[in-house]
Image (cartoon, rainbow, N blue to C red; front, side, top):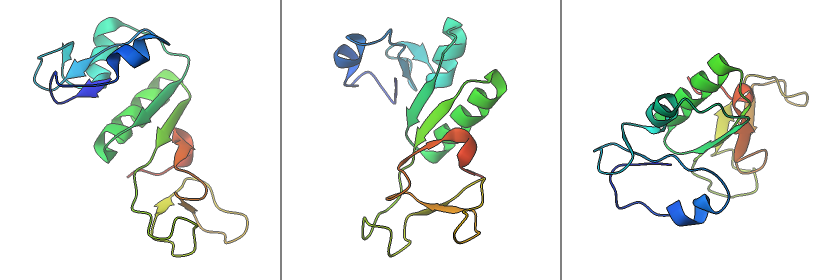
Amino acid sequence: LGYRDSSFFLREEMERYARVLIATEDGSAGTKGNVLDAVRADGTAADVICACGPLPMLRAVKKYAGEKGIPAYLSLEERMACGVGVCLGCVTKTTRTDAHSRVNNARVCVEGPVFMADDVDLD
């Protein structure tokens, strides 16, 4: 889990289900830095990665997962005006062409919000 400082939440809840690593930007709890700094410092080998957060972090997680050959699920945060895919306000670029429209886009509110890291183009 990564946070700006030690005023984080969910630690106890998450510890019921998994071994938890904490990273804080200011170093007030866990590893000083981001979640990938904590993972690298611990030497943890993951079977799968699930991540949500700001786009720069998701880019870094996608890169790390690709380098390590770890499947990763990314939850994208986009503005969803209609919530049913009609307005196309939440479209994100994908790495695969849609069979119907033949474009590399997916609606986060319909096809997501969680995508395999290899399926989304975050650049």
